[in-house]
Image (cartoon, rainbow, N blue to C red; front, top):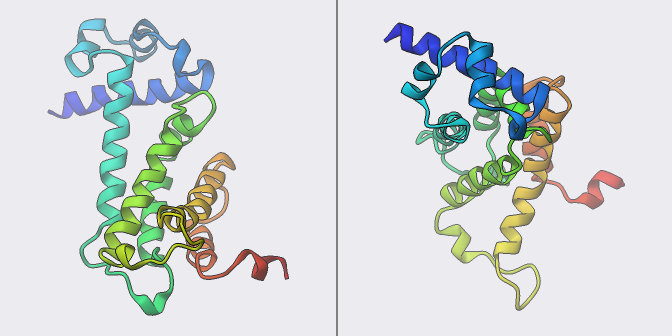
Length: 194
């Protein structure tokens, strides 16, 4: 079992390196096996192809982040005025920091162009899970429009901040980014400018 884990970690490390060097589209299974110093049969014991490898690694990442975001002990507090609680966001960012090399690779132009939208869906799940029935009670910001626009406004800034943090190399501390996200959902753009 430990040997299998080591092989999968080796494949993952090489995969990240190759995405950064060549881009996902240019990578072949041969590139991966050659760089990982394993034979193709060993690769195929774990993955069907490079797409399966990407999907399984992303699914693992998404499942872990989902578990953090929908933590049972974290209930939305109306007095907080934010769908994102500091402790939950911080825990997610600390996990992202641990998996930063993979996240940065797939979030880059050379990685998976679908990753930002997959990530945004996770944040959407956070809002709908935390608010629960409250989303059904939202009033559209503009008469005649769906409340989906309200939810999109709540999602846009946190998603953009996290992706910017990733693209900037995660230089700022998770604590500062978590505070920015939580505080940012409580204030209007007008408050930022003036």
